[in-house]
Length: 395
Image (cartoon, rainbow, N blue to C red; front, side, top):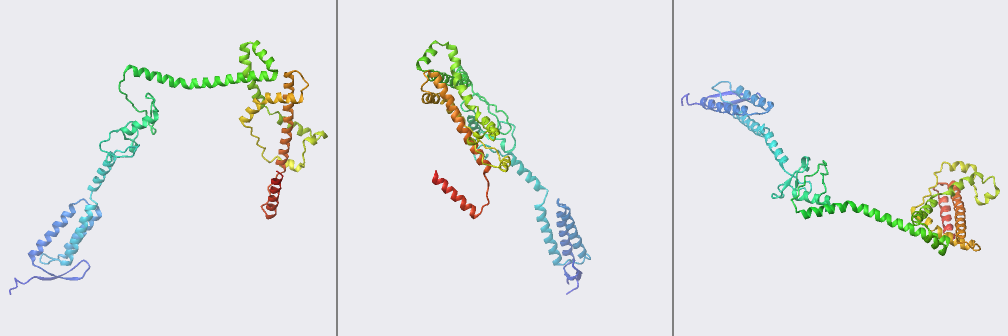
């Protein structure tokens, strides 16, 4: 064989520094080198991050460094590494190319264009034939709503009143509601319905007030006949001026209720507490078995709450004439005048009731001043349960 047919054998160094045997023909070396350079040049033209471009440039310099001369061919190991790095960089460039934000932007735009119903939470994909409307200034997910859903919302707010105004619950924008043109008869009926709707509350209040008024008039007339007597009461009602009766009779239950609200027993109890120690007789009616220390400690105790319900006041005031009449017949039977007997019976009932109430409040006051909170021990628990059992047996 001639020397021309023999392959050109040479040695070179790879990037790590080891000696590599290179066997190839000069022409094939040049063609393969040009192919690699074109591939790297094509990869370098792509828009990539700077670190990837620098990495590819370094790879080109490494390949060129291996090629010592045009007659020498780079090793297969070096070329395979360069191709693998080129393929990896190509894949990386495809994942991080600047075209990707454009795809994301288009996706975001499509998401913004998608409509959501804030009533039923449906989208265009759920019902493609539904009618949409944006009736207010809301943005985002509350911008769009189905025509049918907003109709039901308006019906719920109007409650049968076609002319009522409805506003958005989010931005308070009044909806533009357009009705079809109806006949004159419907317009007249709508006007009448609106007038009735406005007048009904006033009519109801008037009826209730009139019922209360005539009930008070009737109660006043019955009270007059009960206090004065049936015959004298009828004579007074027949001979009296109608306007005086219409004004005076309703004031009777009002005065009774106001008189019941006057808590004169509390003022009398405070007065008696101040002077009970000076009068020996009052000590029997207002026993105070607590010392000065207890009295000083009682100032730190919250005052007793004595709530009086409205029903109790109303019942006590309206039943007072009947109770006074009964007490007058029991205690003052010798008096012939029905009016005087009822008046004295009422005074006696109020006095006796007030005395018992004062005594009861004084006992409550003493009990509150003497109460103590004990330690939770076995002895105290036993005594407490024994006391409860004894109170239960006595009651």
